[in-house]
Image 1: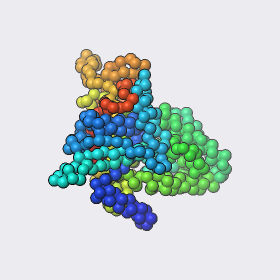
Image 2: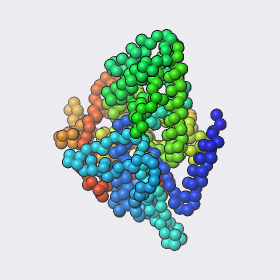
Image 3: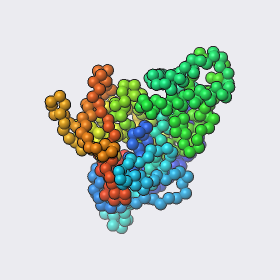
Image 4: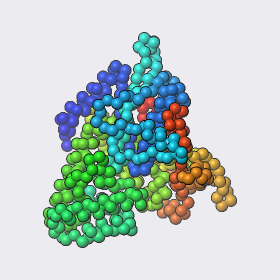
Length: 464
């Protein structure tokens, strides 16, 4: 399909803006941050901003980024609020939660938010003293991970989407809410009428099934994303659809297909085109450890989600889009909560995520965006330790559980690739929730982390 000429014009104008800023020495880089549910995205942004601000005050909080900048970072300051229409990321509120007694994790993301931060760098070269410092403005866009999962859906018509959605849903069929929705589908007549009451009941049951899969089973590949997180506008009639099995005729399938098409068009026009194509870099946070802890069905679900997202990003990274500035040029997939496993297990965690990101398409030789794999603890809340298992020493972690009790935890062995069935039979893997360390509410000294500096150097180091 040929690109829309108006999209080409918009992307070319955006590219011209970027080029102008670079020529003038004032580049502006748009970094989009998202994550599958409960991957710790808000915590990540809080730590990123606090550590950048501390680095601008001379604290060595991000050594790999400082090295990428050649030690020339001189100041960091938040951009003042302008007239943008998006909510502003509330760094102060999130730091206040971490400074409470006892400290609490910041609240999760429910909508788009943004914040820009400017890095002042000393120039290099013969005329550095005459030209003064140069700046890089880092514009951060935070958006719910549920919406990213709609990206693979944009190219699917209603019938193939229905088949794929029902196949994923049946992984959670023992869950009562899922069983109730599947029973509703079985009760539909062969010629189902276009009745609003029937549609609303089907949609309500489908939404309840998705929520149960997310909250009780640990599933993440759940579509459409706005059914789980509709944003500030709430529900609209284009959300009132659900997947149907083959063999059902009548007026109902046509109505649901129209709403499915309208939803895809709305997501493309209202989010992916105006926002996603303007991203320069993209970070995708994934709680791989949580999926291992949740069991084989949840892990299979998250593996499919990661592979589908990676494939969709690769397909959107063609030469024409890169030439015109459309879509992210670099993507980092990040396994979060890396401090929940000891140091010797973090390489295995990265290898496992890399295997999931590659997926069948990339392993078959597909070419796509520059993609990097990372492990990260946005806020480090454990320390490495040693314990004994069946009389032998094993690597473990020590941290504080909610309520203040200190715990020594052997998390189990992380597989290098998607686990074989015998992995799930042992039941070793532990994934406790640790309490964050109590921090200075101003974040003046930065926030302890693992790997945040390496990730930032990979994403923006080329511009420093």
